[in-house]
Length: 281
Ligand code: DGL
Figure 1 (cartoon, rainbow, N blue to C red):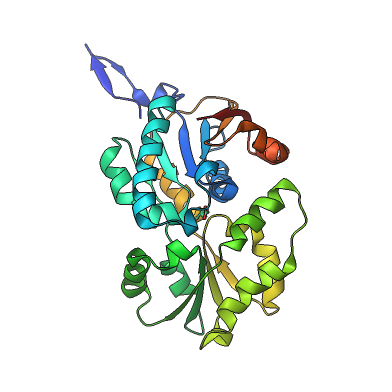
Figure 2: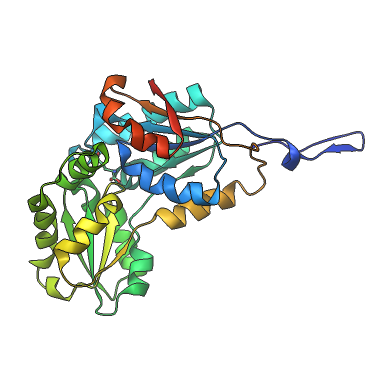
């Protein structure tokens, strides 16, 4: 973030100096676009680096030990290369496992994405909340803590649906979706004890809001869906409120840990977010 410097009475107001230091968003794939979308509504000209750890996908099937080593190392390299002013971990799995360690190694603000249990607790009328996440996210003590702190009087039914990550990726590439994959995730919630009383579903993986329409259809009855993206966008805007952004948007960068060629099917979608430069880490 810009520094305030007073020099012999001629105060340079940092707020008036444009910053080109980007906001960096991090996920394994395109899930974080659900967070970027909300952030761009509030900060439409903020320069963006979007980093996808495709070589490490899916995080949801990896161990805590592997992720808590991999994620800080990767973010360290990304921060060194792109010099962002703020990092957003746009991934529930990465945030619930590695947010603290990432914060301890980076000297810039780090915003995490964690399951939206608090707002869901305020929204539910039946007192039964469904939580769809990756297998790694749903077993985290972080989720237990959110439950006991913000929704102790509510039932929280969790289901790990790693197939939805791949389904969301396929949808953004323009591939056909297999409805059976969506139905499997929905029945994973509904078939649990109290499942039929669920009225609110937390999309606790950033890939899942990209499939909200399909999930709603599969539930048949009306469900309130909630994810953390709007709250995260507000947090990013708050943390950068004294930044003067460039007048017009620059080309955003999409950087992958895998081969660039694999991004080609996503290209037109990425352009909608201004991510026109593709790079490999
Ligand atoms: N988008 C990530 C999340 O929010 C998960 C994707 C993966 O399993 O790689 O948890």
